[in-house]
Image (cartoon, helix red, strand yellow):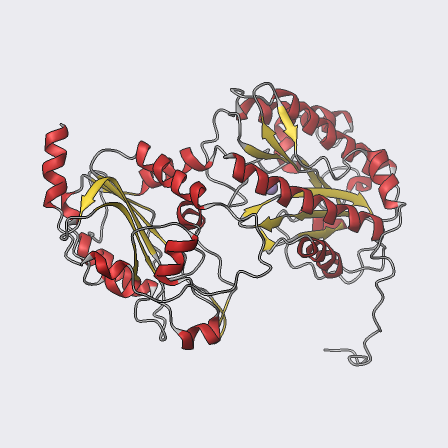
Length: 493
Ligand SMILES: [Mn+2]
């Protein structure tokens, strides 16, 4: 077997000279006052080595940057890198392509390499408009990636993809637009890759292009967190909890959903989180029944329950924490009954968690508590009706994606997951009116350990009495007063 592969490796001819890998141009000097806790070069190199370990023999893995997306005319959404690209390289810019080879490849000049990253070329004019670029030297120096070339060189980079038994890649995005400023944009990288690899229009199962394997390999790696990842997740989660706490202390019935969202996100940024891992969900009363409610347009949240599902993203890693609170500071009898049921379901799920336990055990534990409880309260009569009021799964992995990649079978040490049971009773439901518009979700983030779990989101209270206590407290944001708007007094429509 070994000889066979060595022969194959030498058949792969890389025509471009390796001198092209290091065009002398200084890396941008913008290191002043940057955070010092980014993932390290060693982390990314280690992830690529771990990937190589589990790739099948004679294979290559292809990872593309995410496309840029239009927000408005010539304005793009804030760019978010493909988490796989970030995981394996730390590179955050668009228009890039990573190839990871199982075995060492030999270039025409006789140099050996087992990975290559194509990146955006330095361009002072574009950098003045769109921001600094690392360029090949920056990637080399800051990300520790040795074999790096400008994206425009991919065109003449000779690589015989037909020699590989497997080309491992994710589904290529079908709607990538040409970027008029970039010659080597993602659109051309994809075109060139398709040509070089003779990618067929229609995929078959016998095909060497393997999407499934891409999902499986990245899931296998990403579902278990390294110590560096756990540190970043701890920060994202603690920050998200402080957002929840500050809002609980300052919340008033005359606040709007948008204002509440802004307060959470202000606290996140105050602690250095760059953004949120998903659209913040701030649902007052009936709006809490919409699982992914993101409009947040209600102008007065009033005295009903307020459901807040918000996760800070810190250096790429996202938390996912939900708290549901009574805005007037006291749970009503009905709110208390539903809240306690969700709390008990969450506790029942927690008890099952440890290295080697099953997702399904946690799922069933929570579902049984909710079903029994809803029957007891007279909201349903039959256990099978539970999905009417608890229509989603129990939880998920978190990491670079809020719904992070993983196999949802057994839990293992160093996984970071959420447990988020909920009960939602929309207006008009077939139960006593007194339950209508009550929506409760409690979502916590946990690290799976050998014998159990660590509750990473313990910084924000979950118990009824603790929530009532914190709502009664004063907040540093209480005196954050702005002048009322003078314009817009006339009624619209
Ligand atoms: Mn979640």
